[in-house]
Length: 608
Image (cartoon, rainbow, N blue to C red; front, side, top):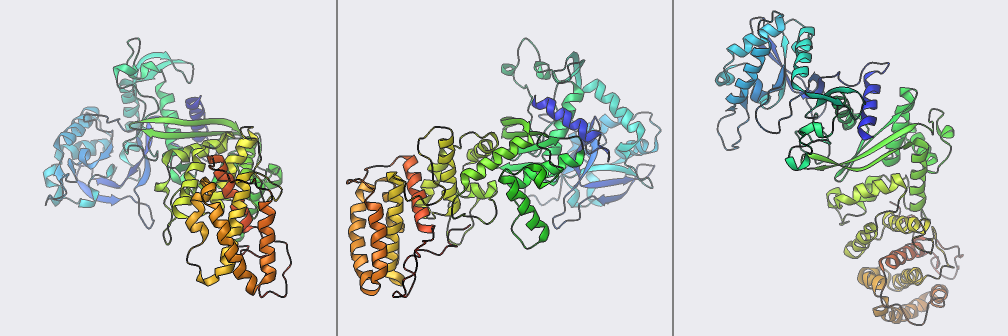
């Protein structure tokens, strides 16, 4: 099913009204760093760099004959390759070597003999010039040639001086390559699992590149390189028969999706998530794809009018508003495909696969933000999945959080939960609770993630009590009440000591209070009496208010504090603490006091 969908997507890309976006059968888009310009006699007359115009220039992608799969041995490519094959030179493996290059004679001889055999007796000017070049070139003379050390290990192609097209683009070169494909790439005919036709089967499927964490040489979805993977005496690709054309189509489509510039891949830890849509018109499909990307990576808040409009549209999208209301070109019935990939040595593991409608994707995303929602809202723009994942990493003062500190498996699991509507990984709560105890940052986004995990479990009937979105003074859950009580006790301490406070009770006792309340609350309540007496001397009205808040919660608690809290109740404790601490009070200010006695904390605090 996955390979069939990718093959269909390749056909769409290859037959767009504005021209093909992917190379034709037998060709691949590779990074080409330099162009070797040859005279008709085969002399090297120029070396042209082929890089993008960016701050950090990159080799440009160009359509060239498909590369060989070099799992082992020496295998030259047709009419292009890296310098070790084309020129017989490469960067020295020994970094302490005084020489700027080292010879790769076996590679060059393989490239030379391969092409001289294929191009024998060819009179086309470009191909003849290449034959002459290979016969005359001496790798030992690299330093005295037009080549510079920067070319080493780069991919290069050939061009005839005075001709615009490259040598591999000539009709004769393409015909030679087509014959070569027929003789080398296929085994016996069999029924293709993708097309359902009797056709030559691909023994080795083309490599897939660009997967986060995968080998630079490429990885495979379908591969059989050991006898233990084979059966019934069949070798390599015959064990899962896929035609040569279909193998080329699905790998080319996947390589296209994995390019960052196409905005159809999201890299999360060890998982690369690619996605695409199929619609009646290409513009409709691109619009759907861009909304999906925006849903998981919202634009940063700026004063730019276009960004403001995008954020407004995204807010409607995540609230589940009708798609036609957001944009008439958004069709909820548009087919949508999502593929999560994880590298495993030279192979790819399928983390998840989803074939659905765009309307269903919107519903899942709306459910996700609904589960996250808190009051007051802890964000100005909907958080991207990256921002959520960073809540699982340590928050160190003066340092930015690093995605490398996030457990790699949780990234893919979180994405899958959002897309499928399944329960979030329980390990998210355990991870965040450990961060609370380690760095003391009990921030809004972290609490929102704890709330989302528990709220979704409630919707799935896995727990019995719903999680409140805002402060719920009627909630009698002991963990929630003790979290509220802890916030009130912290507020009393802050009001009593003010600037003299070096560390709050949250800094010292939050871990104990949220896990083993029996061991710490009697001491905290005893300390609050001294703090209240101090407040009462200067601000009697404030003291009365704080005592009332304290008593309101205490009357709902049992006579004995719980001895231990489960992970779920530790999460409820943190939610109660956050909502009590950051919810503005509706009480009026007493003019007898110098400050608002009911305002426990600035309303903007906690927003991320």
